[in-house]
Length: 207
Image 1 (cartoon, rainbow, N blue to C red):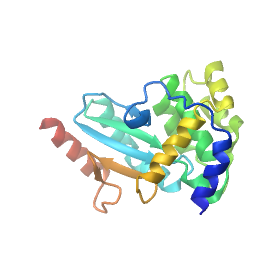
Image 2 (cartoon, rainbow, N blue to C red):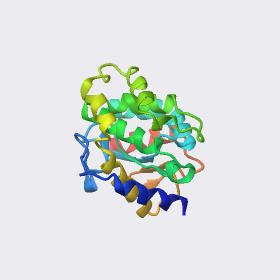
Image 3 (cartoon, rainbow, N blue to C red):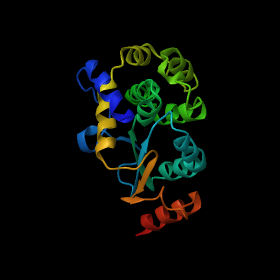
């Protein structure tokens, strides 16, 4: 019930769906990082308020950055708002909107990482506050601009985030993060490690 209760209240505020620059995939709900021609694709469904997502990011980030940087892996980030549904509040959605605003300026990867590095306690809805999201933007070179501020304050991509959250709810996923490497759920694979992920991606790149 909690997950649905957030849905109705959000629909009051729904404006037109404004897709972030460069978003692609079905309904343009994926934010791509890495080279289009990479042989392997990692699909990541995440929520900026979700502690398990932060744990995944912390463990896998260096490997993911290395593989996207070398052209071997592309990542498609999908933003969910599951903690808003579970705990109440709007921090998941507001942070996702801000990340989409960063994408408009070509700064998504840096801001994405900063949001996880500074993630508040799950019960604390700090990311609902625009000033917090704007303050963290100062940690990313060139992000703290009038265009970014206006996009955050207006909630320019809120309806897009809501659409992404609906796709997550309708996708039959068990929770965040959901991480799929070339369609296989690696987050549920207890034997998966960053080293093993790297090995699989490098083998696919050879093939």
